[in-house]
Image (cartoon, rainbow, N blue to C red; front, side, top):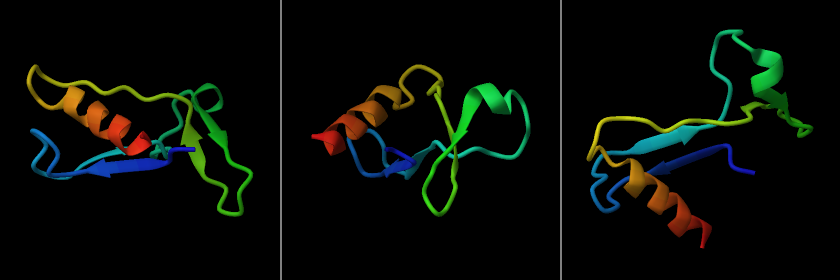
Length: 71
């Protein structure tokens, strides 16, 4: 289970970039967008996330870094 992923110095990503799947403050659509883990820490995690930004900002390279770590 992925909770947080960070990468830096990978292809065009010089600075640290982080994807966090933990729930932030706010109560918008909590019941349909989050779930609570059964672990002792009881994290509230997101069911999905979106990566967006302008062209040539490193979105594809971030996903490639995630895929590289998976392998």
